[in-house]
Image 1 (cartoon, rainbow, N blue to C red):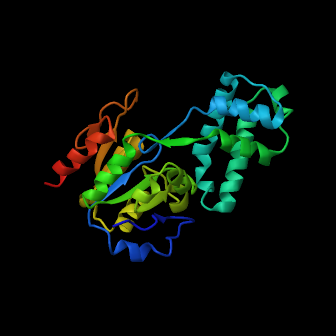
Image 2 (image 1 turned 180 degrees about the vertical axis):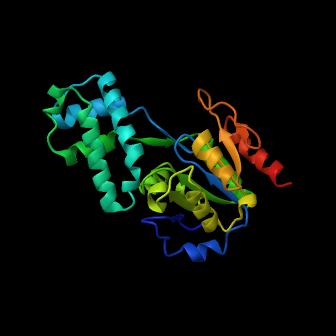
Image 3 (image 1 turned 60 degrees about the horizontal axis):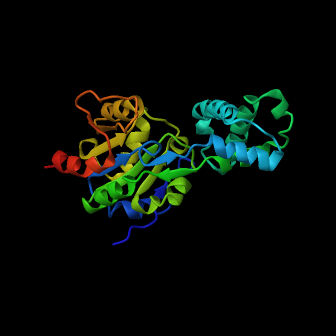
Length: 260
């Protein structure tokens, strides 16, 4: 049976359908990270070079674009909690655009006028796509009767990202740090996701690509933890009792072993 639209936690409040949906959920849950686990960011530097050229007539190198984007990412990670609602998200994006602008050469900054348009250029440069193994993994979780909840350090635009990537219909809920007011590895965001899924910690597993945010955060809450160490990742192997996999295709048999 097709699932209803995922419950999206926005502004720290549950969607109106949350209580009704939860009664139909299983008592086991898959909590899963977004960036690096379900979706990847396409290389943004070439897109930023193009956007600034088309919108402002500015010419920068991909190296300059990469440096500016690195500054933007640092600012975003420190301030993403601002994006807890639509108004906060708009302001967050403007301030991220300002951080990016300030990291560009002076002669380029002079040609970047309106901050709102610059924010639009930044967002047009950021494009996400689902990993090839993401959809099969979520389908497998559904077939196994698990409630699947995305748990991510992100602003409230995450649901739109997952929708565009074609993954949102396979999720029962999308929980972001900005909306909850707590970022992984803080246990509050995991407990909130468990409450939505209607699962106890011992009946849940969390998978993500960060030892600190995903593995340590989940283990502190008594949740089974799995590190996703994709090719080229730097996180290594998770210490016991956590497990390590290199692709989401390994998730289904792993889940079978966990609850047999």
